[in-house]
Length: 133
Image 1 (cartoon, rainbow, N blue to C red):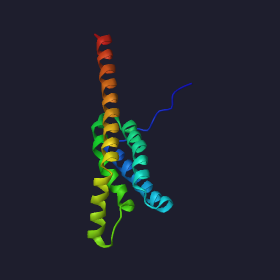
Image 2 (image 1 turned 60 degrees about the vertical axis):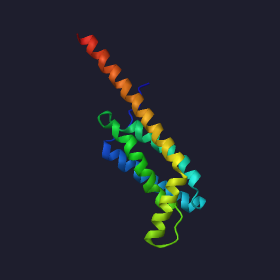
Image 3 (image 1 turned 135 degrees about the vertical axis):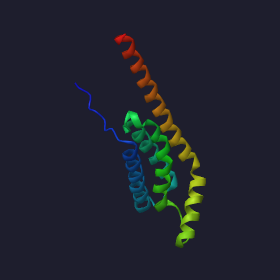
Image 4 (image 1 turned 45 degrees about the horizontal axis):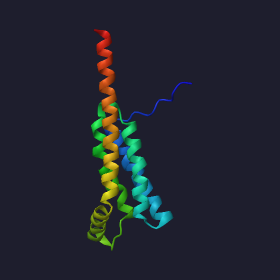
């Protein structure tokens, strides 16, 4: 049975995919679970894996860069705020500080997956060059 090809996103497409999905998940978390930052962090991990797996091989280095940005974007509806722009900003900074473990874990997960894909790509290229010589 032939393997289904996965989507291949450009660097910008991967960033937009990741940010939009995290924003949707943040809004759903707020509506369904009352802004659980732990649930938000858990949902962040599979998004990191999907982003790193679906980004095009030419844009591999963008995945570990865009996932922390997407984490912050999606955290906007989840972060507590006391009203106004200053309160929202303070809530975002506080949430980023308290949920840094999820942020670092997801970013590390994306970086490791990208590194594994890059190593596999280099090995394939070296094998192809050895056969052609």
